[in-house]
Image (cartoon, rainbow, N blue to C red):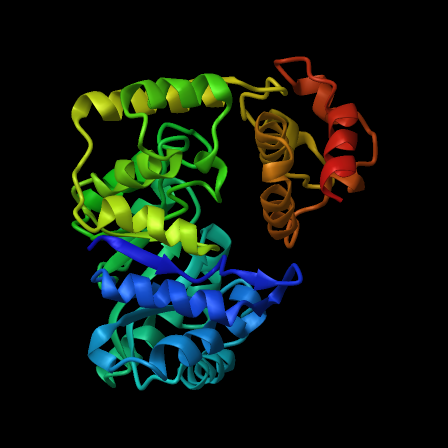
Length: 368
């Protein structure tokens, strides 16, 4: 079964991301394994570290090792020194209660974190762990352009698989470059794990007009099923991660993934047209040329923040929590919208004549 259980958005108690609902998680795991599921995906930072310990409690302590495969990740976003690699890896083995990881990834690579990996020898580290039998398959998750991915795989052909953000909304996006990145992976003959097939829950509930298009084709199919089946139908994809936060999400996913039927070419075409239409349903007419960013003395990621704001305006309050989480992640190494100094350099070069300073204030009000 191509469905993998992503452990980033587990059910929680009291709206506390660190307090996982173990009872509901247990029921979901039991349903997943009973249906033939084996692949679990966790990370050092998920649920404040409690994703790994919950996995140990619910899966490792209750099932034989041959019943599951586990993927974990080295958190490159928080690592500064080479000495941290060994320390964190050993901590992950202990937290998860396993003697080895079936899949191990360098987490969330982009141009900046690739440079960190090279500086602290992270690629050599994971290969060494594989030689020691502590990792079965080495790879990385990725968030950057197709060109950066191509360069990375050319330099490090020893990486055995890649994890990419792919969904029908981002497939033709110039910002995310889902299709282009997927095609690079195919070119390098690297199997693909898909993350964000439902774009953080966004594609689980579409604006009414777009939902009707899909309901007219199959009134029984959930919006999530269209999104997951789209990526599962891609030939080089061997696993699709779904971050399920409720038992009904698991039940829905299993209903169409247990006996998977690929989308037809006509269905793929319809989905991509829906994705194009949703992307065009924008509040801020930003084309992501980034002239503004090149002129900004503060280094504000204006186009990315506007993309998040557009998604929030399209989907409303249901997307706010996801948007804020992504905004906070983006501002770890980029200036916040609120750090705008009102110099106006951005507006002088904007081909769309956007009132960028005013729009950044709206971003601040919504996400900070």
